Amino acid sequence: PFFITFAPAMIHETPIHIKTPVWIELLLFLLTIAPQLKAQFQEQVLMTPTTIDTTDYRRLYVAVDNLSFFKDNEYEGSFVKGYTLPGLWIEPKVLYNPLPNVHLEAGLHMLIYDGANKYPCFSYEDIATWKADQYQKGTHLLPFFRAQVALNKHLDLILGNIYGGAHHKLIEPLYNPEANLTADPEAGVQILLDTKPFTLDSWVNWQSFIFKGDGHKEVFTYGLSSRFRINDESSRYHIYFPFQGVIQHRGGEIDTIYTNSIQTWMNGSVGAGFTWNVHHRKFHRLNLETDLTGFYQEAGSVLPYSKGWAWYMKASADVDHFRFKASYWHNKRFISLFGNQMYSSMSSEKEHFLYIRPKMVTAGMEYSLTLGKGYTLGFDCDIFHHFACDRKDLDGVISHEKTSTSFSGGVFLRINPSFLLKQF
Image (cartoon, rainbow, N blue to C red):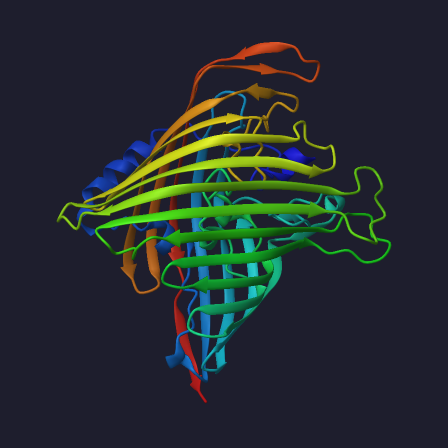
């Protein structure tokens, strides 16, 4: 079951494959509109502002937040099986600031896949198979509520639905950007701290609550994403040191499941980064970062390894209106809890395949086009190249995994306008 858990987007019984040159045509189209594009895909397509606007004091807004997407994963080799994600999520809600430092949001979150008419009832960020025989008709529907308090100009407290996903700024081996499309909104408690030399995002995402007598596990994830900055991010030469980690715990005091009743898994990374803000008319920015990542199974015996590690080196360049990116990955017994399974030493397609020191290089491009306030078009494509390595099965038989090259690409439309209803 944990193979499903760690790949939340792979919920289709029969993945949809499209073998056409549509991405070539789309790339040519994007090149024709390049003068209007800006390389801020993560910020404009996957994130929302986290600061409270004091000018909205006692103003009631109605808003519609929507991300429509079409993402195709043409994966080769036996690491991950390919699939396509056509659909959208939408959040109609009301916004209100009863005090200058208090922000409230209330509404609904709906996930819809093209061609689907019923959805299994489980957490789409950490799939709980105990509800697999229950379904919702038409859409995957959840309530949405966020309460945010600015304790001072540097510190915010969020309860309910927190700022999750891309807002945590986790590296891809720790968090798969695709989960911004498919995962439920994270819910629990969050602390955001932003000072001149230091930023901190600390959160608890409560994924499975249990009552006495329930036949499933209590599950929650604790996360930490911090960065120590030597100087200001806008400096010509900026140096920083990131520290990140996620810990998932399964099992509670009133848990009625006694087989592997307590499970605790950890992913973490520590690194160093350098940014050159060129401020040239065409060449805007260069970023280099290297991270040492780790995996640790503190409790339980579900996963095949007790610990592992990996090196992750990445680079990105903002040239004209393009963001080019590349990375190198080398791991030994590393298992990613929420990251892209391309970075794992355990196959999510072949249940018992374990890879011995797999290595991979990636390359990609990002675009985003602002159509107007609250309307953004985005495009992202990635190439994953795995080098040949050895693998072993459950019986310890060693075989050879051939070199493989995989492709992933998608087009996205983010719509999040808001309309003033009343000024109290």
